[in-house]
Length: 202
View 1 (cartoon, one colour):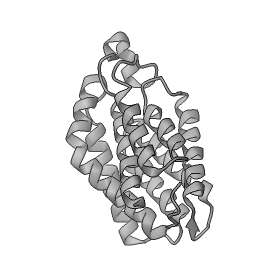
View 2: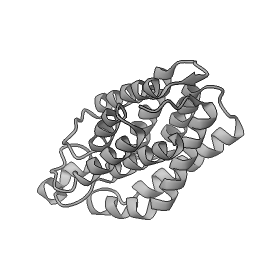
View 3: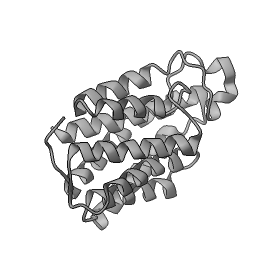
View 4: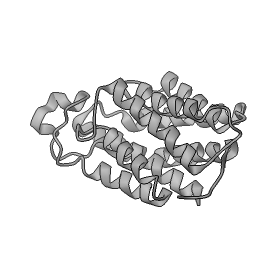
């Protein structure tokens, strides 16, 4: 496990790098969503993370937990559909788990994110294997116990593994067997967050 200490500035950088990745991949996320959803995941996430970066630049929070709580609030208020509440819950609950400490260890960050992922599962009533963002989040958080690079790789593998799955939750589930053969856009955007985290943790 990394010995990196995460302060507010490093968590802000994680959100900034995540926003850049979402911006870069917005077209692909929307293309994936067009096959099994509303065709707006990329534009929604792009709008949400743009708002996150602006809020963090305008009034930088003092602690890692406060950064994630602020980011979560922005996503809830700016991202439409189910993605806003789900991503907002992930970051807000993770931030609350970090408390008010000025710095957190990699292990404390992993524990905070674990709490966030569990909150997403409760909110969506989903589990890994349902072809949702949890299929990237769950293996990503689990692999954080090994390293940030391992987490990024596990999340990416998790997103790719949604292709042959039958969607059991969300709008894609309305398609039944026609959801098979398409990569889940939520799992794909979740993998981007782990890749960004691995980048800033180096």
